[in-house]
Length: 171
Image (spheres, rainbow, N blue to C red):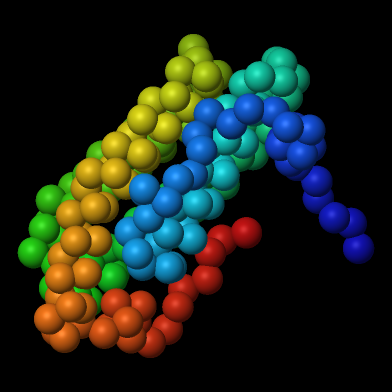
């Protein structure tokens, strides 16, 4: 059995700086969502590290990680929106529109990169970082407050929030 290694993992182990650092201030208090947000941070850092390693690494690492990011963002947003629908979150439609905007931007950037169009990976990663953390710190905090309030009032349970069947993440 061959284990696929990611060169960006080696950079992380070597102590390279991350562009994004997870902080508990970003936590929603919903374990599944926070776990997925941490993975988005991890993927963003892998994209950033690919930008630091030089042209050949960008071609190999960035392309692979970009596709993983696209898959993971779709997966995470699907999970999050299913949860928001399940708990009857009043800001669902607006939240969904924000997700659609980011997915569109990521897909456009990925397609530009794949088609050889002029693309600045470092700039894209910083834009992604700003959007992801802006979304988590502001928009996701709104539903987190709603969930906490509903739980405190006894109107929501962890089972309702998490659902019966957990979806597994793409590899």
